[in-house]
Length: 77
Image (cartoon, rainbow, N blue to C red):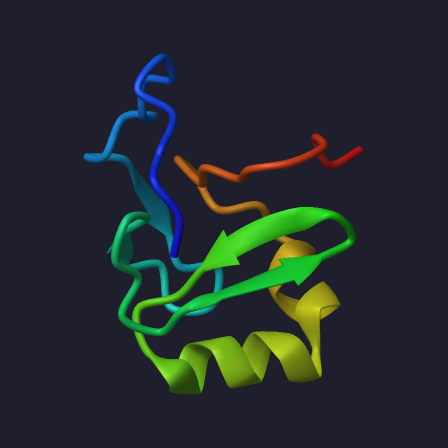
């Protein structure tokens, strides 16, 4: 671990994202199912089962964009 630079302010910690598999709201600071990077974009999951389903076939879950989904990284086309 390292000491944070006191000049750098942390990003908002109360952000939430929508799990692309089940649609549940996920706390991005503590995602219960972890995260997965796909095509340069971070996705957040409510539980490991949803993350594994997404990793197996991401296009299935990305073909219908979820309303309110927050992603970190490049915008999807």
